Length: 279
Image (cartoon, rainbow, N blue to C red; front, side):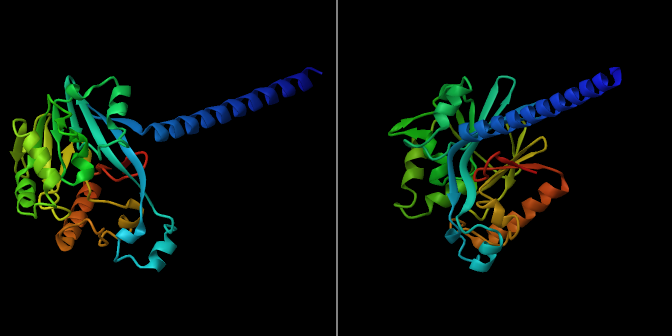
């Protein structure tokens, strides 16, 4: 009788353990889903706390990749679009807060509400590091005619600024308005410079004239090097229509992907889907 009791007790403990494990797994999935819905993911890289902030959740249409034939899209299961996002990254070290890009801005932007959920206001940001000047990266810098980040020093690659200033007035209108609004806070750098916080600037041109990647610790912030990871990680030679110089963009993409692989870096990109980091 004692043996039967012990066997039953052991079985009950095993089943309870399985139940707890299942509940734990279910909770982890629930937490991951909640993070995805909230658009926030936090990781630690050395002394840096890095927060992915999903400004807008979206999908990239495969049609923006004109060199990708339908058979390739079908083989990758991307007929309904390529998982993507419009995102920014917040870097915190001690009392220093750096925001990489500012998202799309406008009524659909979640940047400011998500910063608020982290206990931060725009005036809490010390530095803005811009990867480039497309509207879905600088849109959050302005609220109408007013600047949003009044206490932030803005860093931008000089080749990026110079390249945009040579473009047609209509194409560069948002850039001119935004850069003029921040002219007292704007500082330029050259590729290879190290910015406050020990962040290294890296040439990633091609997407735009001065497109910039940034490295800190073992994190590589790649901006728009990758627009559709599910496609371009398989075929990095395929460009979206947004790449201004396709041939240079391909060279930059292949070079930096190899650099990340050779140095075991984690990549953070402004159009990566949840969870915003790629290893």
